[in-house]
Amino acid sequence: MAFDSLTDKLQNVFRKLRSKGTITEADVKEAMKEVKRALLEADVNFKVVKQFINSVSERAVGEEVLKGLNPGQMVIKIVKEEMDKLMGSETTELKLLPSNEITIVMMCGLQGAGKTTTVAKLAGKFKNKGKKPLLVACDVYRPAAIKQLEINGEKVGVPVFSMGDGHKPVNIAKAAIEHAAKNDINLVFLDTAGRLHVDEDMMNELAEIKENLNVTYTILTVDAMTGQDAVNVATSFNDKIGIDGVILTKLDGDTRGGAALSIKAVTGKPILYAGMGEKLTDLEQFYPDRMASRILG
Ligand code: GDP
Image: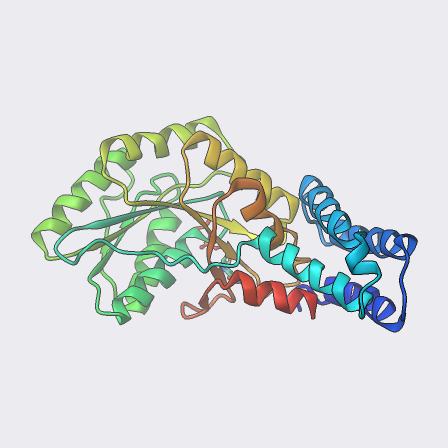
């Protein structure tokens, strides 16, 4: 299960701290060394780890903490508070425009990250909340992706707009919005094309869609299993096209958790949802505070 190893290691550090009646600066230092190692092994971004350890250490070696009644407990509390700061303790919801306007969500990400799956999960979720969504096939490079979106759309009962692979994505998106306006649809999800790596053509294509349409949200899908890379990908997309939030997929797998812990701190953009499986209902709202508690055990 994701995070188990990190949680075990942190629990060990906490146990040692709790067992001591008094603690010295050296004890705090030793504990921080272990926390640092555990976070790095969990693939948390190096800069994030460094900043985190510095913040905790600065607060923990103060007189009041070390001379206090329960110093070990106090240090643990500081770790928890700093973890909340790191992950952002507020849940960010995707707020849709009023029903008489069309909310446009552009979903982007690398190939295999889980875009086509996630976009269908989201559309299904909002359909169940009474919205009228439309899925749009803008991935013109892989005919299989269009087919997959059609299959997923059918499974969640959401219509799919497609023009095959003979048009530019921006023109497909424009036509889809016209179609939406005529058909009483108020939520449009653009499933864009990914590439194997961050690539200039992909970014230009996404930028062109953003320039020509009134995109409400640009959401990035990233695969939690890719660890540090997930954070680098998020940074690249944010720098090049600007993103509003991230959906972290495959958190049901054996991820070490680094991406979940680093994305907000590195990019400043929140994680909105977590993909928890291949089924189209396996999408959960992301609660950073709950995630932080789970990691800390
Ligand atoms: P895309 O290329 O970004 O559109 O990625 P896909 O939507 O085709 O997903 C790639 C693979 O990841 C598929 O086999 C999906 O079933 C799988 N997948 C997507 N999201 C999740 C998730 O949250 N958990 C798991 N376990 N698999 C997922």
